[in-house]
Image 1 (tube, rainbow over the protein chains, first blue to last red):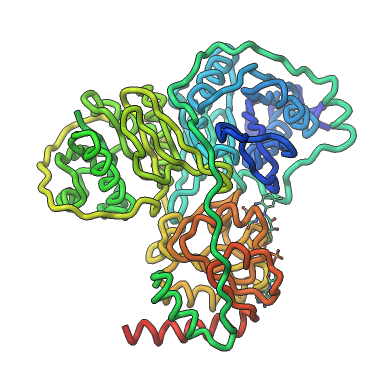
Image 2 (cartoon, each protein chain N blue to C red; image 1 turned 60 degrees about the horizontal axis):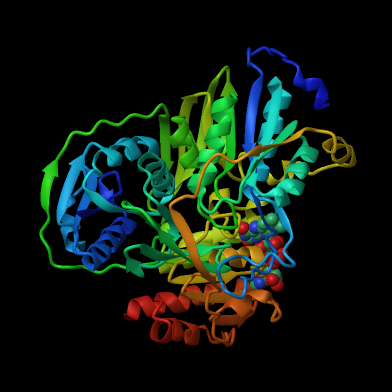
Amino acid sequence: MDLLCTHSNLGANHNPTMNILVCISHVPDTTAKINFTADGTALDPAGVQFVINPYDEFGLTKALHVKEAQGGTITVINVGPATTEPTLRKALAIGADKAVRIDATPMDAITVAKELKNHISANSYDLIICGQESIDYNGQQVPAMLAALLEQPFANACVGLSLDNGTATATSEIDGGHATYKASLPMVIGGKKGLVEEKDLRIPNMRGIMSARTKPLEVVPATEGEGPTKPVSFEKPAGKAAVKMVDAENVDELVRLLHEEAKAI
Amino acid sequence: MSILVFVEDWNGAYKKASFEAVAYAKSWATMNGNRVIAVTNTSAPAGELAGYGADHIIQIGLGSTAMGIAGQLKELSAEVSGIVIAGTSLGRSLAPALSALTGGALSTNTISLPLSVSPLQVKRGAFSSKGIETIELNNDMPIVSFVPNSIGLEPVAGEGNLERREVSSNDALEVLSTEVASGKVALPEAEAVVSAGRGLKGPENWGMIEELADVLGAATACSKPVSDIGWRPHSEHVGQTGIQVNPNLYIAIGISGAIQHLAGVSASKTIVVVNTDPEAPFFKAADYGIVGDAFEVVPKLVNALRAFKAAS
Ligand SMILES: Cc1cc2nc3c(=O)[nH]c(=O)nc-3n(C[C@H](O)[C@H](O)[C@H](O)COP(=O)(O)OP(=O)(O)OC[C@H]3O[C@@H](n4cnc5c(N)ncnc54)[C@H](O)[C@@H]3O)c2cc1C
């Protein structure tokens, strides 16, 4: 089905075929126990399973929906060392057409954003979809940096996107509500759940896994040097003291504790 | 030199996180003998900012998008040795855009005041609150975006002088509309959050959750499956893949406490858990727990809090 759609199908609404880039971050599984190396300067990857960043999964499925509606090509990209390749292969198995890995071990978001910008400037994409945030360093930095570097419009926390003949209408979450934006493509999206619904997320099937083996995964050398930020150390948050149980028949006691002890009310 | 702080308003009223941003900038500036320059919208009540440490206030006609405002702040950052931006939804786009435009090194999700100022070191949340990173920002205009509610407010006596400037804003993004629920407490900034999960059985049972939130002046939130099945809007989904919150008080009702849920809420200062199952994992992450049926406990708690509020 996917293959049949790659050739331009100018539908009734004259939507052009789309060249879409989906930025994929390779992160510890949400259930992973996080430990740091003995000297506290880095994540200890031992025993940690890595997955496609959950926010990026919504972007990838959205890209598939767009391609199915109006034709096009989906490229997935990661800036990272060779250990991220299984994650890119998984994205290919879900339905992306090709993958690019920029070979770097970036220490900060600006370096990632600049590497992505260099790739994008040398290729032309109609739409660039990132996840709003990656769940490892929780920076929420790369998408906005990338848009600023590219001087392209940017919709963050994007929970809805429709395209009509080169114009995008994007709905974004803002504090306490929503905003709706309009922009001409190309643009950069920081996506999240809502871009597509959870139940519509694609997962790899056997045929996808087989075909992913032969899809192109291009490795590109890094072009950027070190960025201006440096992790000094990592620690785990202090644990909580033991929970105080309150009898269900005595909620007044909870109110007293919240007021007098926790000073929370 | 100065520390520049961006002060966000909504329809002419400042967000609490904006005062926190000014107080943050003041603490930082005090550490290295700088002044605080606050940048705010022409229509906002600039006078309020001096009380948190703004020495100089520049009012401009703020653009309506993060990219537009980033360009404006860049224009104003010539004599600046650091920038503070609250991590609101706008700030979370604005800070990285400004970092890319100016080359200023950036820490987002910051949860501490500066540990040292040259080079600047701060602590930030990482790995969905499973880790805390100390990061060094090694250049001449570091930018700090902090998590609202994580620093606190410290009023100071001060008088800021006021200046109006014209700075144009450019962005190819057009704002068609914005819709913000009035009278409701916005989740990321809320000091108290009442959150409920699948234990509530169905959307029709949220009345008591809203009542509880109402007595506490709290925002309402929910677990991921609750928003996935459409009992509550996605905008209430908290956790690792939803909104991350750190209120003073987080009350979890009928939520099991899965690791992904805890990842987004465990930074809350006081956590109360109500669950029928004494083995629910959430109790291990809680400060106070009640083993009981939400349908009995919540109405009682609402009454007890009403009585408490009436007496105090
Ligand atoms: C990649 C990934 C990301 C995820 N991200 C998130 C996230 O961001 N946020 C999130 O919340 N989840 C997330 N999850 C889902 C998470 O794993 C749990 O499935 C989810 O948090 C469970 O929601 P719940 O506690 O409401 O439901 P359940 O696990 O079904 O728990 C319901 C609880 O209610 C209790 N209960 C039942 N009846 C009553 C009653 N009458 N009174 C009181 N208590 C009662 C039960 O004892 C139980 O503990 C994610 C999962 C994955 C795989």
